[in-house]
Amino acid sequence: MSLKTSVFGAALVIAASVWGAQAEPLSLTSAGSFLVSPFNQILRDPAGSETPAAAQLRRQVVEYPSREALGTIIVDTAHTYLYFVLGGGKALRYGIGVGREGFTWSGVETISRMAEWPDWNPPKEMIGRQPYLPRFMAGGPGNPLGARALYLGDTNYRIHGTNDPSTIGHRVSSGCIRLTNEDIVDLYRRAKVGGKVVVLPDARDAEGPAFAPAIRRTVSGQRMSAVIIPR
Image 1: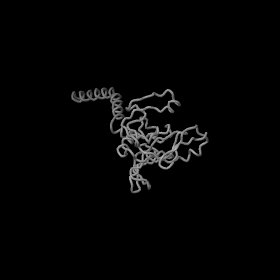
Image 2: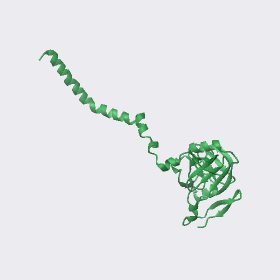
Image 3: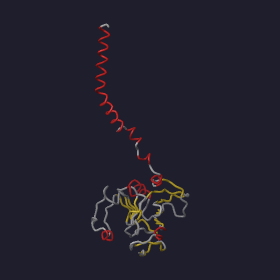
Image 4: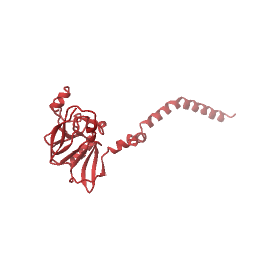
């Protein structure tokens, strides 16, 4: 064996030893890098695993024949949808959260006021049920009214945003209609003070076993009259 061959062989042995010592750390580093890579984030994007129900709650233009005028807001409590009438048999549909059992209502109102990042003053009826609530909360990302609010007539009801988007599609509120902050900002740009809001009745309320006493709003001309829901 020549000196040249011996030197070459020794170099191979040293290289193999070094590679063997570094192989495991390099492997772990590569795996960790892949887990945080932008490509892997795309693969793990929750939107890719969105359920059909969640997809239906996303803001979208749909076929919606209606006799209501352009710009009318129609709330479908039963199916947790809000429609903004576009005309031509179409509407922009939003997923919403609605009143929980015993707190749904129906009727016709108008938008009396609109506010960006509104302050929250819980009405006395709500404080009576939940005395731990603050008496005032300044507007901001942590405020339950979210990014925007549309006030309905002289009632305590509002169409507003929420800092908890997981509540969309559920019966969760004390009668207010909630959208994601992104959706309420979009609706706010389209709506106008004086705009008509129609809240459709939820047939399931009449079929329920019993409800706590609460105010239910029903259509009386173009205004709403208070009716007590029987227990």
